[in-house]
Image 1 (cartoon, rainbow, N blue to C red):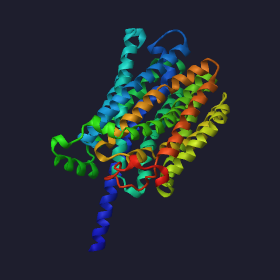
Image 2: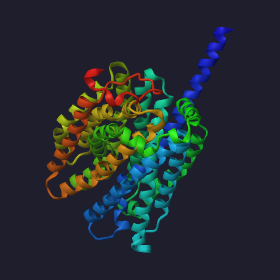
Image 3: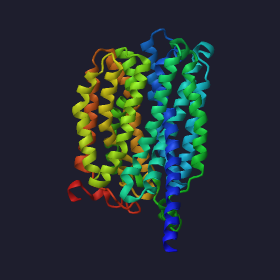
Image 4: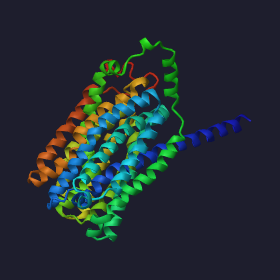
Amino acid sequence: MSDHHEEATQSSSRKKNLKVLFGIGTGNAMEWFDWNIYALFAVFFAPQFFASGSPMSDLLKTFGVFAVGFVARPFGGVLFGLIADRRGRQFSMTVAVGLAAVGSLIIGLTPTHETIGAWAAVVLVTCRMIQGLAHGGELPSANTYISEMAPREKRGLWASLIYFSGTIGIICGAVLAAVLSGILTDAQMSSYGWRIPFVLGGVFGLFALYLRSRLQETEIFESSAKSQKSESQKSKPSLWSQIREHRRLLVRVAAMTVGSTVNYYVWAVATPAYAISVHGVDPSGAMWAGAAANVVFIIMLPVWGTVSDRIGRRPVLIFSGIMMITLLFPLTSIIRGQAWQLFVAMAIALVFMAGTVSIGPAVFSEMFPTRMRAVGIGLPTSLAVAVFGGTTPYLQAFFADKGIPGVFNWYAIVLMAISVATVIFFLPESKGKDLTAAGEVSESLSPSSV
């Protein structure tokens, strides 16, 4: 009887875990699909919204809107982080994915500049702001949820689901772009082909919303919420007092994010469009190369997550960051006018980028106490991504247009060096930490004391 009961318990636990992983993964994939198809299809729809007569000028303006969308991310990080810390992780990430779907659907149905003039650009900016708010909210909600649901000895592996599922969303967008650009002419892509992924993203986003609405809240949050209810209203710290109390941790999170976000947006998102517009790579071939390289990326994510659960977070972050610094110029020089060159450069870069980003949700969750974990992740990461990640495609295209692409490479190297130095000097080892007590002593620890 006891063996049968144990098997039933294990089976129930597996089903619960699969439901959690599928619910988070599906919603995260659709959110990243909605967010990143903008960069993938920018070269096709830019003239439809700006119509300046210069393809490069239209592309730069479109990437400018890409950057504007990131302005809303810090607000989304704070708003949805606050909701996640007060109302619950599950509720917060359910609302976030629904908001992202609405923004994508509106972009897909928006009339062009030829029909409504400058209002087309206004709608585009507004929708990107909506999606920025949602994507900024997705980050703290989903990251916190997956880290709190994961077994502590496998938290690094579970945390890799965030970029794993997100990259699946990106791959779906890249494959769709490759298929559409292969079967449609350039004129058809610019006319209506670019609308297809935005409409699909909106529709499937509603399905993701349904899945997330059926997930349970984390036990760690519910336990914390119960203990907070027993506190007097006066004794409960305000959001801003908690931010001031943990300001050093917030700065560390931001510093660890700046390098990875710039290099991630270069190699996982923007490089195919960059190769098309700057190096003249065939659009279909570039999209297939980007999709194939991202397959390499998702294979490596759980590998690095598992390694971090074995040897620790710090060695993984330091090694992968140093490799990105070392390889940036050599990998950039590989890309010329062929799709296979693009694939080789992206695949090598993404092997090491996987080590940098795969365990981020686990590392950041292990730094903060439960009552401000989502805000602690959301505020600094969304600020760093807004300022540095959001401007990456624009700066990369801008310096290439000026004939000095090496300036951008040095910019990316310096930011990655900042992230690596932060890990070396200020991040204590935290693998296997009990999240019910996480953050209580993080401020006083240094790497040498662990």
